[in-house]
Length: 442
Image 1 (cartoon, rainbow, N blue to C red):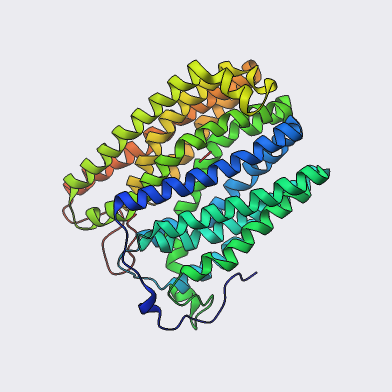
Image 2 (cartoon, rainbow, N blue to C red):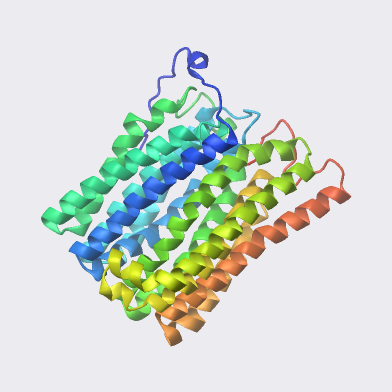
């Protein structure tokens, strides 16, 4: 299906506005992501408080199954577009690719849903529709990110969070039908995409040009490694969920996923900072300013490390109290798991900053095999720890995955820098007029 109008905007150049600075963009993204994460968290709280732990498990299972598929077919288009600082591909080329990949993602998720029955199947389909809409919005976010207008992304996140969560909550409280409520969730996101997101692009949004594949094929070629990277990056933290649900059922998955969502909450400022850094790091890398690039990455890592340590301390001292207040006693009974999840979160935050850095450094192709090894490490840990230790084994697996997730981009950056030092003027993805690819969560 085509989600884009075919009429270009007139007088587009007059509608452009000045870019925001790093501090302003970081503030807006932190605000938008915080509100959006709070709305998503509210969904889990509503399901836990007014429904059942099983419904929490079904909903989070749907997310765990669909998110890696949608990210794979997304081909990292947001990163590629945001990093195309030289405007070497028209926006219509990205639209062509997104039209094909978004449709393919939903069809693939539909096939996965066939393995399940009853309400679980329909919930997976509804969540797949929501994630498909989200990946289309993500393309428009990439455009705003390149223009350094992250305030537009923040407003879109606030609208999606408010409308989608409100619709889901109202329907769930009145019908207690999780699948129907999830459909309303997807409808709310679609409304925001159509009424707001698409109107923030001041270039032609034509899905198919006269020769579409001439412009779109390089985007496919460069995006495929990023799609594989995204797939493997999300499989890593989601593999424990698959194994836990298969071994202990939806209720155990619901408890674990509710606690693991604290990782998402702590990741809000990390992602805001990283998304704001991408175009700045990309320009530093493109200009060969290696020392400034490294210094900026190290400063970001230092701040994120302090944030992670605060999270570990809070989980250790206040975990039981917080879990009981937010979710209820069924979750508080497993408060000893939360500090382990917090340790995993602290390491993941560092890995996320390094992930933004390697994308900004135009290291795309090598990411796929590196993060495949990360996913394999997670699979090995899940099969080893979860059958023997249950929920605690899932937390151990998250820590193992987090360590691998941190080491992968770190080693890629080191090898990339060594290669550039040995070969003057040569990059992993060269700075040529062909394509500029400078530079998301459980």
